[in-house]
Image 1 (tube, one colour):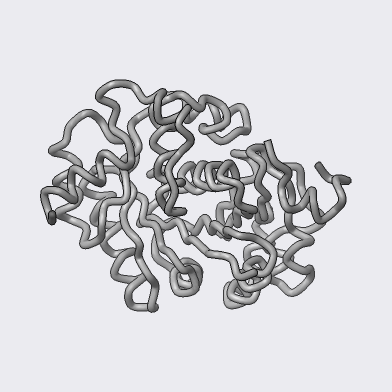
Image 2: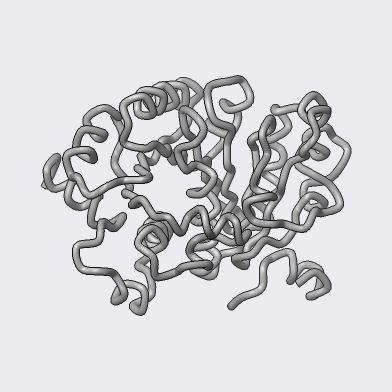
Length: 279
């Protein structure tokens, strides 16, 4: 098996990058894929806190330091997928060798259908590594000008290192189509979808669950679900599509609208590998 690697990237923090990575992981697991989420924000690892993940034997930092194998750092997360979280101590950052991520990604490709790498925010040597090795780079930004300008820089960086940028995901979108159109004009990449502003996002993180698990019928959860299935080349289950509120801004609807203007319960892999001892 050769799995697919997604890198979820942004030009700065606070735009919903980690939230997007977490929810796409949960949706793709729901679609019956074996999924692992890698917390590659080496300086500010927070996936473990957002998902309330029980620590594994090792962390991603241990793996990148050559002190552990990749699967030793994998733990089960809420949402029927696995997660590889980073260390939380300042000393961990200095031990990690970013160049080893390529080897880690290849190990995970051999075990999982989907690997989602939550990259660090901003522009640095660390953040370039996943951009160059991923099959799909997903850019995440809010519609604000400053965030979009930073996202444009990330797009340029990804292209410079040979990254394959699949497109842009706009988060915290209000009801204005003008904001979406303006954002698309600023970023030279396809619009994959829009995620509406949703107060339940913060509540789900407090609960340690992906939004699509915590509040599956909420607008943002619906949009994440549609986006996740579309990235896999599939459609969401009928039950979820029927539940969309009238006039809701969904991932597919936003993509189709802009495109028309521009041109015509399962076990995680970790549980199965351990014979159910860890799940």
